[in-house]
Length: 181
Image (cartoon, rainbow, N blue to C red; front, top):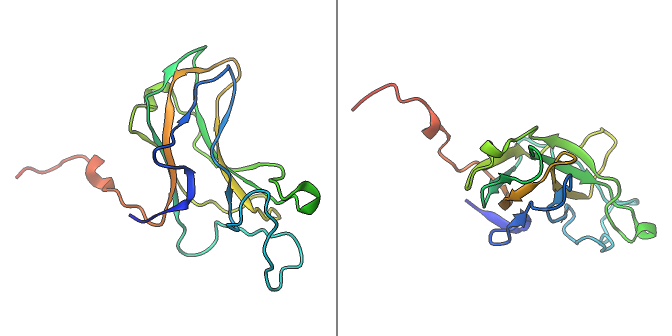
């Protein structure tokens, strides 16, 4: 497995706590798809006369985003659930100090219950999704961990959220064993 430290939404060793007030969402680091960093003007790019942006979800081979739980989640207020969302945002340009514009959710896991959020569990695995709507040309990407209003977690962390170039786990280990040796 090859990991790029620049492509870590949540780096290994820097877990994201999802404990907070009721209904509060939690965000990962913001990745600049250009690589310059949030708040940095795009370097000169030949042929690019406007703000930098591109669709990261195109091409034959797309990397995967993988999200893993650290500390198991337990309910705080109400019956909390978690929804992992991949979000993209355009560059606001010089007038906006090169910050992310409006975040657009392009893919999500759907509702994950406390029973599914056990320690060490992989809770999300996405191929890098294409930008949506079609005219969105994002420069920035992040993960948003959405919690419904009036609910919260008493414990729970996201151990890491990484970009992998290939799937490197042994997926068929979960298959039913239909033979004996």
